[in-house]
Length: 335
Ligand SMILES: [Zn+2]
Ligand SMILES: [Zn+2]
Image 1 (spheres, rainbow, N blue to C red):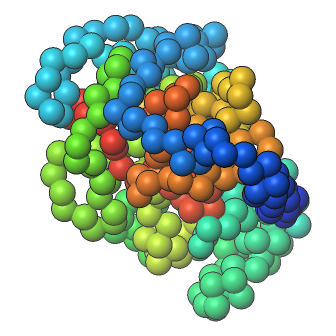
Image 2: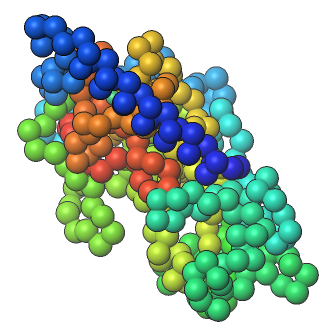
């Protein structure tokens, strides 16, 4: 997929519409300053309930029921219990690794590096020694065929942090056949409970206890995971690409996302606000980054959240290339 080519026009739109807005609000300078929506104080603690109807249940890979639960602030509450097979019913999985260095972008997935989304096509694999400025990268044979893990055992071993040297220069690919018996259960509060102190996710090497690693759940039931440990993967001279939807498989989590690229179920907003794509573990909605005009919110907090009258407190997902969704939880969660 050619994600990169979509970026420039959108950035252009951002500039144009910001410019227009500023101009029109200046030229219509009435005495009534209270209509300036940018300076409205929106109450962050207003919470909108999770709507279970937004979840994609048609594929029978996901069930959602209401259960009682205890939240991280000690309160008893009601939660939605989402049980999934970890298989997305609303889009296909893969491909991840291209077979040959001549293959085009259709044959492979994506890689996230320094804020950019790269197609893992044949040329990407061919160019890795140059890209990473390290001659040790050579992930293909004399015929141009890419070295790809071929068995479940290889997929498990290559994902091990102490990956052996025998997996150096392998493209790691775990396929859907390996996760036919995976089941994932998520609990999210029906009504988010705003906390005066936010919970920040542990970054790599962080040691805070009782902080979840999962960020949230997409509307198809797939996990929004912690950032993929791309530097560990690369330092082992392996590559574990994501498919175009930003997901890949390991045998423990099943299929899971590391980036939001617009493939999973989304719910458009009547007012042109960015579309809903899932819920964080605290029950606050997670929305795409850009609204229908291509604008990025300008008032996001450290967690990547903000409030408005329609949605209450909610998050906007990080850019796909950042290998990240949100930075923490504003509300209470199930431990
Ligand atoms: Zn992963
Ligand atoms: Zn918003």
